[in-house]
Length: 346
Image (cartoon, rainbow, N blue to C red):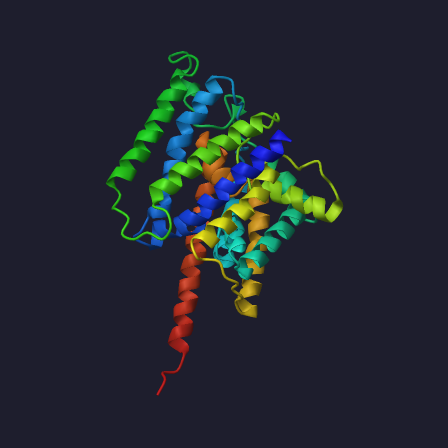
């Protein structure tokens, strides 16, 4: 019962923050290459800056025992790129799709259904052998899960025993993030929360995800892929084995986002054209394929995995950015060519 309550409450707060802050990783990644306003990027980096030292401290205290995502070059690269392409076509990342569905965007709901279907295809259907093969080629560092924390041990073992070297690495990363945040231009306009409020709240929610998950002996933090697969599997096959804390978090996220949309006056039913719905569906399926092949999504890799400096998560997130940039460029090209082909009006 405790797991259900903490999951629902944390999910409600997380959904509220995602909606009020407009925290969508598709928008964040796209803005890096194509936009001047990097507010969502700053919110994301602030989440990492909060979580990296906090999780290292919790691990040192023995309160959490974080696992790192497997570092598979092909799975991370192909899955990440496909996931990024799907984000563009779906009109948002996975977490963004959830909170946009809660405010009445039917295109996001269709994309979400496609994401669930794509996940089942990759984990239980015809694409399962591909996923098993790709994730089976894991690269280890010093015999352990690939992480920036154990990378220097190859040549610096013994100089900084225990957690000393880890704190140095974490400090360097956090300082680099802080320099970027301080040098970045100020947010020119605000819709909902300022970026720093969004970053702080989501950062605290992410820490809570690690701690509450550890109470049921789960060694990972926030995730969207695994609980979506678990809920879809329960609805389709009646299987309940995968229903854990993150599933309740995901269930709580929906009413939290709904409450935020209602409070912000952004609650309305929006139905796009049939062509747009098909695009959303295709994008959702691609996101389901890519995220499950890569072993995580923009939350599982981009927030949870990167907060413990997992090389597999860093690699997959970079590949996702590449997919977003490439597909955004292609969409811009197609849109411009179609606009140029239209006859001038009289």
